Image (tube, rainbow, N blue to C red; front, side):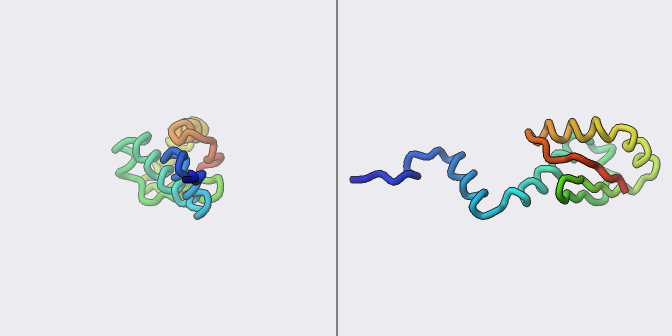
Amino acid sequence: MSERKHDNMKLKDVIKAFVKSNKLQGGLDVVNVRHAWEELMGQGVNQYTTRIEFKGETLYVNLSSSVLREELSYGKEKIIHMMNEALGKQIIHKIVLR
């Protein structure tokens, strides 16, 4: 009886191969970025967050409070660092607060 190559693969490797072959990583990144924003920024910021978009290497965040938008603009580099750390990879290079 011959064993097929994938019979010895770990589930983690099978899932990675599936994601890669079906080009799903971009969609997963979008979901992961939204989740990371919600987790890191907390309820105080999330109640004023109206929309989160991730395109290319840029995170676009719409905020309903101009005061909060101004306050967060001072810490963009720190937010980028925290987000990338939470995601486990360097995918966010710029944040645009609207």
